[in-house]
Length: 324
Ligand code: COA
Image (cartoon, protein in one colour):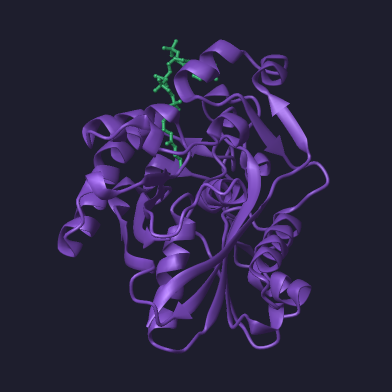
């Protein structure tokens, strides 16, 4: 029994913010953002929320796969920007899609979150506990940004992407390898404040800022080192060479990271799909959104071999080898 990606979906907020829009509210420029990151626009929530985007992406994936919400027996949502501390976002989705008997889990992992969720769902499916799983990466990161901090706020956007995964007897097509790792030594490289202790026995003042802090250069170097390492680690035992891979769906953080990985692995840039110019870094939503956009255009072909690789806060990284 293996795990197959049955369908994909995504949802983006209606409001599009350009680099020029940002240059009107902070000391930045279209030229700097484009050259250093490859980002041109991002979608920002005005009316939408993390749960409304999650529900829209989930419904999109279910509809595209012709799957009824009642068939779903596991929902995992990866988000660092939920609407509530509780209930978890997966429970909100369960209600909206009419699932009746699903385990509902929310994970806080950041940009590797969707592949981490796939890893968890894969274990449930392979052990026979679950037949169909809905995994979603959803973020309203705009509420986590200090919009006076040009170093971080220009990089991120909002959105949600979804996969429906199912048990399959076809051992040739599906998730043929998956791994998830962390380096907790670098946990200070990307942070956002939580709630300080506050009860009748103690009161701790909130931090000066609870917005996102990122050591961009440290994360950049980490990604350029770990992504190729992780891809090689997964392909080697399977006897698959990097040259055999048709597309590398990497987390969309910075176009220069894609270029560095392509160069290191001696692969042409055409093998590295990208949508960051349009959506920016949408964290856990990044890979499923990108894959759904490719799927909509008929660019995912049966038999093709894909790498999906996410990396970010934690620092965490996770890689899947998928035969479509
Ligand atoms: N507009 C204009 N200037 C900016 C700017 C902006 N939006 N942001 C930073 N700068 C300035 C800096 O202040 C700095 O100026 P200084 O030298 O006078 O201090 C200069 O540009 C260079 O900054 P630096 O941080 O060295 O740029 P960089 O080339 O390392 O690019 C990132 C910064 C964040 C784009 C890059 O490091 C990156 O993408 N890192 C990875 C992020 C990532 O993958 N995150 C994943 C999270 S999941």
